[in-house]
Length: 136
Image 1 (tube, helix red, strand yellow):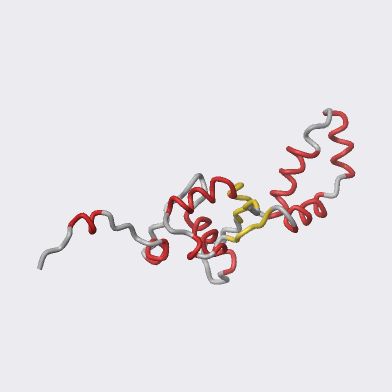
Image 2 (cartoon, one colour):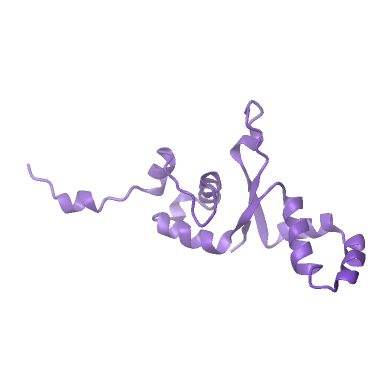
């Protein structure tokens, strides 16, 4: 019985196999746990290989934050309020409703996925990070 070695050399594991084998890498600064959460959120069937995942993450991944509120505050300070003159910044920040602004960001435009240990009550590592992504 002969086997075609060229087929074996071109074998690439599926995304499901990589997840099962715990071999999903960090991609574009997105940590492994967030890559897996991203894939699960969209659906494994949507991706043929890691190149597909990388391509989607390039546009979608924003960063890791302590909370949605932390992301909303940073976004507001950098993009919305940050463009004002420094003396106006303090005034605007005093009256700016970060909570409502953050809520609106996550209604339309962004979503977050939690670190797996966040929902595990027996986990010794209480990592409360979330990954923030743009809706594409």
